[in-house]
Image 1: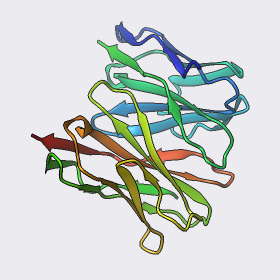
Image 2: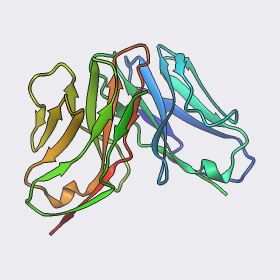
Image 3: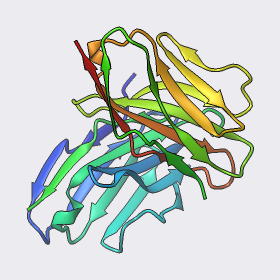
Length: 114
Length: 115
């Protein structure tokens, strides 16, 4: 079975450019999470969805960040305009149900903003 | 608010020794789950073990066991007979089973296994 698929794996862009990160969760999973990992702040939860509906976006750093989940098999995280402090590894993870809740992570998208 | 605390930023352990990685958590909810993940230098996140708040037995998975002390709100990971391949970053995480269903992580502990 395919795991969580993220693209791109690496992105290098210049300050001010728009960045779009993509995620395909595991089929049948009804929860999708976006995390950001940096050395200084560790793993931060940005936003999560349940059945394609955003439940909590309180971790989104500012209005430059937005996330969508138009259907059960696709989600995007967009940064516009990007800034050097956005450089990080962005993980998407999915899970099924609430009772157990093990997260299955994608391989991450490493973003570098110059 | 929920919180996970890992107080050991780094640890050095001799190969074949047992290792305990500390994790304390804070929640006022009664129903929750605790997880440990391993992140090797390659960057992927690998699920290791899970403990439910109502589970009476400590969880075990191969060389991994979770020392769950509910009254102290601690969920320490124990790795028996450590191996060089255990060198990695280890994260403790919590999921509370209420309306606020997020999963939060601690800052992590970097474990170095010495030959």
